[in-house]
Image 1 (spheres, rainbow, N blue to C red):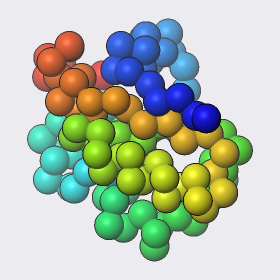
Image 2 (image 1 turned 135 degrees about the vertical axis):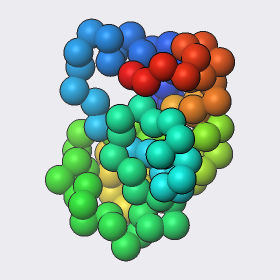
Image 3 (image 1 turned 45 degrees about the vertical axis):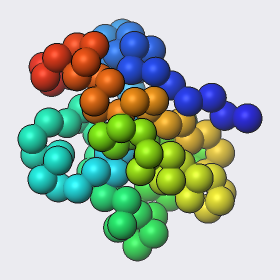
Length: 105
């Protein structure tokens, strides 16, 4: 069972300078309003853009969206496609902003 990750744990890892494979599955307009410096691949485009992240199949990937629902769908899809370690950011950007405000990463 792959454990999801909280915004607090993600922030700690980012603050520590860890290189994290962060994929934002929201839409472009949401990404432009506020983002966590992840790679933008909207959920609807994920199947057709899977080759862009194929090299990460055996690495940890953290997917996120606004609230955690779309990223949970993305997580399940990627696991079905053979990705080994895909974690969902619990609460998504909303939870991030409730803890840390609208400051970028």
